[in-house]
Length: 199
Image (cartoon, rainbow, N blue to C red; front, top):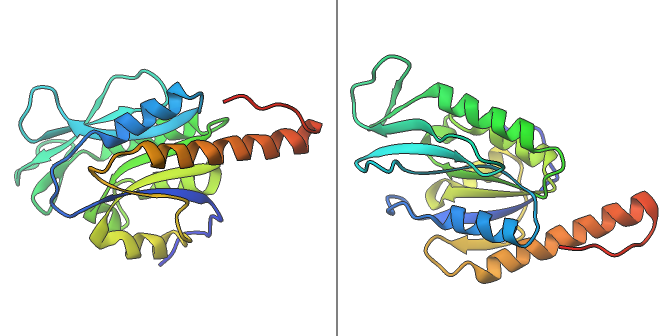
């Protein structure tokens, strides 16, 4: 099964299976925002209290983090078990609401930590489908062993840029910003004739 074709421009943060989580997505989002790009979406990191508890953070504006899951095999109320993790479906719904709210007018939509759960059609799949249809540029963080399946599901072409997790992000960020400038220039020219674009 595939989702509707997006014809969207997208970029890829590639994650080897089982690699320890890093904060590249937060670094990239901050660099884009510091350069003037409007960012929407969300990213995942371990909770401050440590352990194997994970939270979702909104990248479009300041929002309280939402607990999304933890390592374990014993789901509690409002939780679901998948492989060796317990997830909260309401966290995925909250992330989609953030995305729906912040997509209008954004330059880049970012969706972090796409893995086996999404390969079943659950998790962040609805958010990915929304972003690749509506965002001028979508950055997806995907496990390397699941990349082909995601590209088929969302009918994605070749990415604008690719960054291996753990590699320096400077050139990757520069490629994304170049695309943002180009897209803004096209929109401005179409809407009101040629004019200077700042970013």
